[in-house]
Length: 88
Image 1: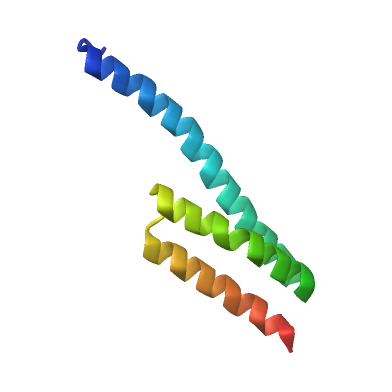
Image 2 (image 1 turned 90 degrees about the horizontal axis):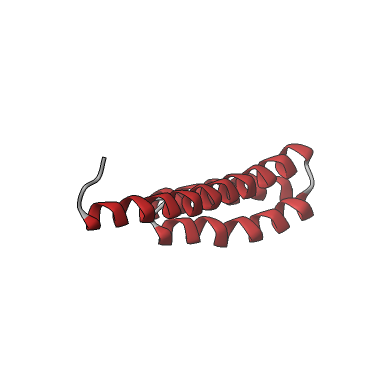
């Protein structure tokens, strides 16, 4: 068990951060899933709308340190490529 005041503070802070990070990660995954579902359904308009919502969510995750910035860029690029295939 933590003995120092700073260690106790760190435990409380980590618990708060864990809740926030879990929510952010969940929101990012949900946004990505919505794009994938729209692509599978073949609905270009819905896929574009979902992509527009997912991009800032993914970038925000990268900014908060949940994703590496290159991972975020790669995810956005691949989602964009999938949506682009529907445009034909």
